Figure 1: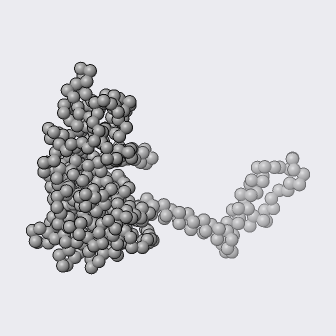
Figure 2: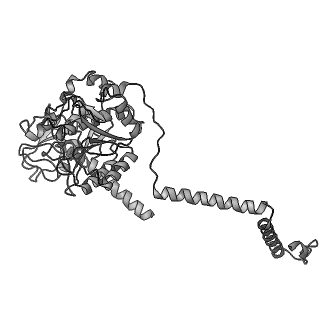
Figure 3: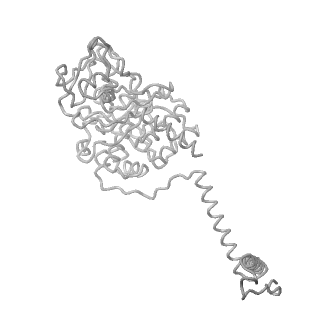
Length: 441
């Protein structure tokens, strides 16, 4: 069991590292002055690579990983992206850490090579919910929390990590449908727009502008159950505090339902479009459009563009709700998943989510939290109680009168005499006397 646990832990650790791309970017890198370098055809007659660039401008080739993370997902002039530290194209503009120095570097805002890219505009696309017209406005919520420290996993079509308003806060993620590859290199589908609603920067009116996005690419709008189960598990094991399912999953599949409940048990708030007929449970939020008959919780004005009250409109609403949960969990990091979900419900106005109220209305407290018990924990409890009952029976049998008590006393007496006989005899103990047979009855 220990070996299996160790292997599983190591495997999860590797997967989590690959999925999240966890690495702290120096605080100074967030300043307005950006440092960039334009890749040349060759350096010292050899093709350029990130390790050599890190050595030249940062004095440490081991910092090549920082450069890779700073540029991962950015679309270059040739519509390619940096995914391999050893494969650079001439003319690519690389963002470097703030402390890079060298005559070949450029200081100032990095030009957007992809300003006309449809994919890169998705996160800033106008969503049905007009976030700038909220009353109270988002700025009131941001005075208390902005999503810092929170990761929101999104199951769906994959996210464009270079999209306006999201660059630098989208982790590599994973392509769960393909079984290999990243989840932050996708232009297809709506997940990039959902990510923009959840965590677009303040200019693009994201709900939680400092939250990180973990994109788990699961294919089209209808997510295959097996893929959904794996993706939900990765989201939970990766430490995401919020999980947005941006598509339709099979609510009749017990494996999917179990995976969602397991994620909640891992302290993840799960947000699902109300079009998925799941049974309500603490830690789960079913989100829909504010169309006059709101579901469990709704987003303001997030009606379906098609007018049929289903589909993409509820996905937008779910993203709005997920962003609100990110704010709550950022403001109250000690709050359990179930109670964070309750806070969002409790502060909704006529069923419509209210980000400012969810963050600023009082200080929510955790209710009694009961983690679903596993079979192993149940077996251990049974064994402990069985041992306690057996010990009690032995003590009672020895103390209580009657045949059982008499038998216990005789057995104990015989053991004592036998032990004494082994220890001594009349040759070395002048006070030793042979046992009285009459006392054996």
